[in-house]
Structures are given as C-alpha cells and as structure tokens.
Image 1 (cartoon, rainbow, N blue to C red):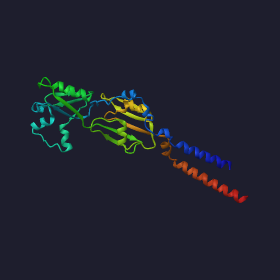
Image 2 (tube, helix red, strand yellow):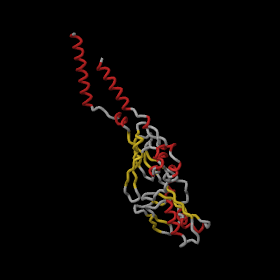
Image 3 (cartoon, rainbow, N blue to C red):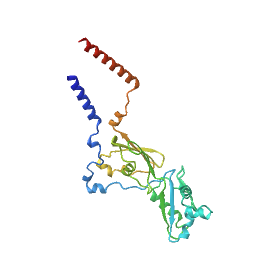
Image 4 (tube, helix red, strand yellow):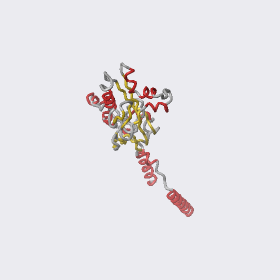
Length: 269
C-alpha cells in the first residue's frame, strides 16, 4: 500500500513538472502599467539598411516629368526598346535594382552607385544629390522601396517559414502573428534573433516576450533577412524523448520476469 502511494505521488509530480505555469504563457505581462514616458521613449522603427542581394524599386519624381524620365529605369528601358508590360512579376524584376556583393547598383545616367550600408532615407537623399544640381534645375523626389524585405521563423510556431513585408517594415509581434503565433510548447522568455549586418557579420539577440519592457526594446523591430528561432520548452523536450529500442526490450523482459515471479509466489502460498 505504501509503495503504491509513493508511486502515485511520483506520477503527480511528473505531470505537474511537465505543465507550463500560467506566468510562462502571456506576452508582455503588465505592459498596460508602463508609464507614458517609457512608452514614448520606445525605439522608433528604423529604416531598413541596404545590403547585398536586396532588390530595390527606385522612382525619381519631379514637377517636370519629362526631365526625370532618364533617371527612371522603366522609362530608360522603354527608350531602349524594352518590354513595357508590368503585369508579370518576372518581367517586373528587370525594372528593379539588384544590389551586388559590393553594395553597388547600376543607375541610368549616373552609373555605379555605392549604397550598401545606407538606410532607406539616406539612399534617397544620396541619389537625389547625384541628380541635382548636375542634371536638373530643381531637386527631385526619390522613393526607394525594398521588394524582398523578408524574415524567417522556425522552431515552435504554428507555421514556420518565410514572412514577407511589402512596406519594408516588420516587428517581431507582426512576424509571429503571420506565423500563426507560438505553440504552447514554445519558450516565450528566450526567442532568438539572428541578424546579418550590412558588412556581412552576424549578431544574435534574445527577446523575452513575457517581459513588458520588450515592447520598448530595439529588438522589437526587425531587419530584412532576420532569422527568428523559438526554442521548445522543457515540456516539449521531454515529450520528444524516445526510449531506445534496446532499453524497451530490456524493460519488457524485466516486466515479464516480474510477472512470472509474482505468479510463482502466488501459487506457492
């Protein structure tokens, strides 16, 4: 009787240990209690930084539309007799600028421009300064759009994979929402972000989604090509453990011997 009671206690302890506590599940615990001045000091969403492999759409505008046509790739290609059909994505790619391994693009009339490592706004200002006043009598407007802004999510989320952002900006909560949110087995307190910098180096940060201060952290906003990894919690790790076949066979044999011994003892009483 005593041994059976101890066995029940051990099983109950194991079940309780495998369950997630309630405090491990919610995001941003107590965020509604953050002072207004703390929320106002939150890191603002920064412009994405141009990196090798980026695909950019760059439009140059002015009140004099004819004057800026030579600086727009679509008009430039049209003048050369290129295809003007913009309905097919594969054909659209010819109108974009691919940043090469050295951080350069080839721009109509301006030639090679080094923009690697520049932010979106800095790139716009730089291109405008290369056009005005050398070619135009008034400063043009320049708009840069990232056509391949994306991040990758893997680990304990419902839909791991690639997440794209058409507006060139994404924060970690938006990315997790698009991935279907974390599973119940995902660790909220240790989400890893692997980032490739414009110089090719990598950095690793961790985010605690349970912590209310997370929403004012610089890591709240993502950069293109970030990799987010959600680590499994201890419950998930235990559930994925499998008994080796040799151990299973051994335990089965021991169980059989115990059963035989119990039967013999019962018959000899």
